[in-house]
Length: 500
Image 1 (spheres, rainbow, N blue to C red):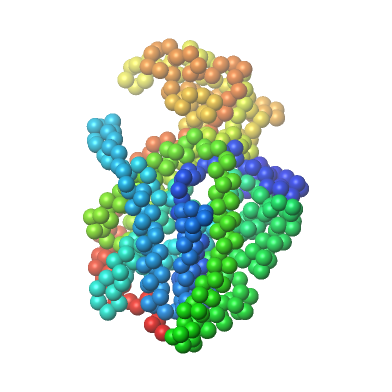
Image 2: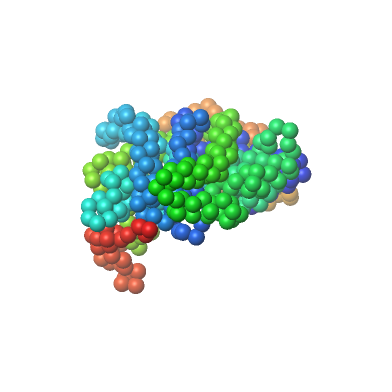
């Protein structure tokens, strides 16, 4: 935790109110997100219990598994949820747009992409478990399921994998979006409780933050946001209701199921209301300038996977191959670096956070050589102005670090030449290397002038994708099966729970 974020938490604790950590919302927020509030059965890994689903606050759909240990009911739940999710995804696939790249390559992408919102990271895990349980289901044979069940599994797995990548917005926990923008006086773990987090940010009218937090921690007043229910609820209400359903005769079966549905609806409704209240709060935060561009990349990813599915693509593997895992890790690392730079470039609050730990600096230009030229290896004379910035920030960036600046035009690039301590400050000399135009004389405003306030942070820049060996060159100690046929055959013969 940096000095700035730690200070924000201390201020929140002292004022007993949430404090903004960022000036902007760095996640794209769709006009029509699909909200899913899942519940799972305690003690039964990946066993769905209920879900409240919908893309409008006033028209949620309640899905219930009256007996979560029944394979038939779990499959029926997956099929019903699949109908809702696939209808929403198809809504995002109504229109495509053709674009031409610099190389004159023509590509077609959907103009929209899905955005699924869940209460917390536990909701993401619940969808991951459901996707894993569904995507390998066979549509023929003794344990066949409806075609939509494996389709749901593959799409849920795609969304969950996209959520692992920093900056994407197709599957997001609302607690993550809120805690990214607001600091509270509670721990990071407590911030995963949606009700507790909302108590800090927007307590109900007439209640203090302390009173709202007390209610948020009382399962009788505010049931947990899932995916697990409160142990007291399971013991005194859920377990007896499921037993009544199991032992009811055919005439009383419907009444017992209605009782169970009403019981679970009461558990889900408070979280459903909190979800939409949080969405309304997040809409009130200005969107960061680069958030839309990141969602453009989501649309490209969504289009690619959609086309793959339309071409009868296979489900995702149970486990990555060693090379596949290395490629995924490389993508995730690069996405995280890009997202962190985007946030700091767009947001002065985030930039101040990075400055406090020496990952960026800001100061005043105290000297410069705007007319400096150098001769390249090819014998060309090019402008390479030098400027010196006096900064009070801790400076930990090494010479040779490439820099970008939110204080200058977007094409501006610079290079650290040296950093020299000067009392309580540091003098950082940088060389401007691009963004000055094509002429020998830099365009006005492209070279910082003396007295100008300036900020710099590292440029992640372009870098080639790492080169990995072929699968047949991997040592046997790290090798894994690359053929999906055995995996699919195993999944096709696997039961999903018990029938009783």
